[in-house]
Amino acid sequence: MSQLLLPPGLVIVMALSGLILRRWLPRTGTGLLLVAVFLHWIAATPMLALWQLRAIEAEVPRAPLAGTGARAMIVLGAGSYAGAPEYGTDTVSAQTLERVRYAARLYRLTGAPIMLAGGSPAGTRSSEAEQMRDVLIQELTTPVTWLESTSIDTLDSAVRCEKVLHEEGIKKVLLVTHASHMRRARAAFEHMGLEVVPAPIGFTASATSPIAQWMPDAQALVLTHRAWREAIGLAWYRIKFWFG
Image 1 (cartoon, rainbow, N blue to C red):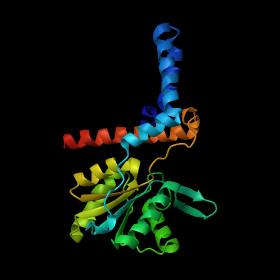
Image 2 (image 1 turned 180 degrees about the horizontal axis):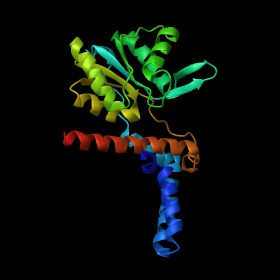
Image 3 (image 1 turned 120 degrees about the horizontal axis):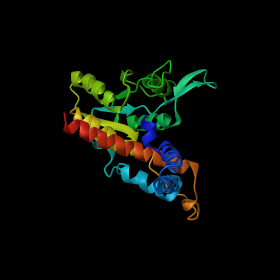
Image 4 (image 1 turned 45 degrees about the vertical axis):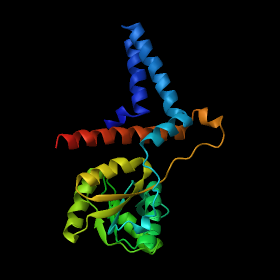
């Protein structure tokens, strides 16, 4: 159901509602159709999509991450490539691979032991954490200390990771996730009492051609969808935390 709050699902619902209402309420129905078209233009225009995503992204770290004093590194999963035929099993998605690759780099810079977090919300045979572990150990020769492989979302990961780290006496952590996801993830982990040092990756970049920035593009829809999802998720977390 959450997909109906985000483009393109929201646009489709509005357009269909407009078409249905035009029979009994012509002005209201036509108005909904026009709003749907306008919303689709906003969602599918690279310049506007990038602006929306940058508004939710975390800042680029200004200080070197090697001297933060963080005693652990948490890497959050970002989906799976289910039943990958070239690998013969489930493996990490493209976004998750970006996080894992950066985690391997950070490990060499900081030496902070790695905790991988992510269950299998999509129903894959192996969890996101297990898939990340396989890539880190087998392909990037990077050790993994802790595995949290049962969480279903970011907040659940924060709860479960904090429980493990609390037993280890660890309070300060590096948090690896995409820049667009960092604000929501940081809010979740700080709510659980951890001191978070953001280690964001995957910052947005502008299209090279000024003309292309205003031409409708399918990738822009993906970026808008991501920006809206994170904005709604962050707002929901703040409401949830406020009311206990």
